[in-house]
Image 1 (tube, one colour):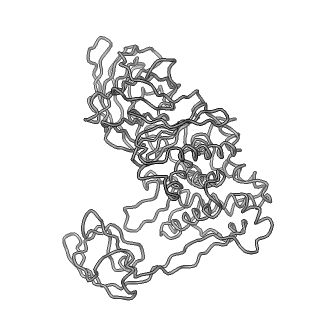
Image 2 (cartoon, rainbow, N blue to C red; image 1 turned 90 degrees about the vertical axis):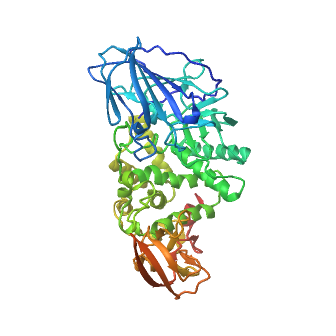
Length: 586
């Protein structure tokens, strides 16, 4: 677990930084951006070689985004000189650069990073902003991950810098990290940034800064964030940082959590409508709560990190799924949603999980472990998707776990107690993550009873006993199949490629007729083609001419009725006193 350190939002005027002077212990990086039009960051590293084989390593992933990024592929123009400017030879092996320099040689390494992907786990530079995901820019000296790091930034004229890194004294645009874990955990946004009003919780400042806020209602955003942070701090009883920054990187997708900040894209989000406000608040509550659950309360596999390979764990459902659950818990406690909206959101998770075929094939633990291949939301490109998302099943199991603990303790204990115990026992006392056995033991100790039946839903694809667990809060769950209006075909066309099939729903009429993703609809006796056709009569025969790998075939099918289970959660009319107390406690 990276140690705590003083943090501050850096918002400072740009200056020109001269060549750094390397020392034996502190690698010094200088980041420039001379020509944003070509989307290239300039990196200079001043460092002293150690050992017989001095090697620089670029991480293949960044914590918080469990996919390989292979950042080394974006490196251009790699060159090494000694302190006198004489070239030093090197060779590359994948994401590693072996530099032929005797131990003690002072080196300057130059390279550029192509920053052409506007995404929170990637690097981006254009005329409007620069965004740095540090694991993808700063190659580290092998064997020195725990060494202090110094970073100097030379912004474009008129640009300022936002990051959670600690400034190095009063120097402008110079930062110090105690080690590379902290450097990689501190994204950097550079540009003509907008700073919204800060707020304090228990005296600790929280900043909101970024670019591309667009039409977002700024006062509403800050007010909602203050309520969300307050709810989380009251639940956990601690603030483990001295400063926190919400860093908005503009109209892009995704968000990644960090020890004292989160970087997030706005996408098309807008908080001026009730639905838009709820989406943005839930998104930011999720990323904020991650500084507790993932950055500090974490599976043991998630730190210290191996940046050269995938870091797998069977417990991402705890890290991500329980955070989805708590994003809505925080909104409820912050007074931003009511109990009905809280239950509606859980019903949506249930529908997404249960109405997809993957729930018969992949367990929650498997989805956690296999996310590196499947992606965080399960595989989407298979004809028949046999995967699930821990973002869907995880919060449902989290809710059932919470209900089981509340029921077993007559509502005196809850999942909140589990989170606080994990935080206290493993993060604060032991400075490490927890094992699967330790997570379950903590839950059962809080509940005062075995939870074997519930944990079976983590390791198997067995159908959860929803009626039992939701019944603990006096909730009924509607699991009946409901007929959807219109005729069901099951084909979705690609809007960018006329006639090409983008998706075929499993077990739909089109699926049963052998139609698959990537096929072409060459001819049809339908006026339009869509998964559901409200204007078409059910039972109508349909003839399609399908193109597949240059061949044509006729497909005859019949529009059917699509049935879906809604999984609506509603309070029972005759709940007992304990059930009512449990439901009222959310």
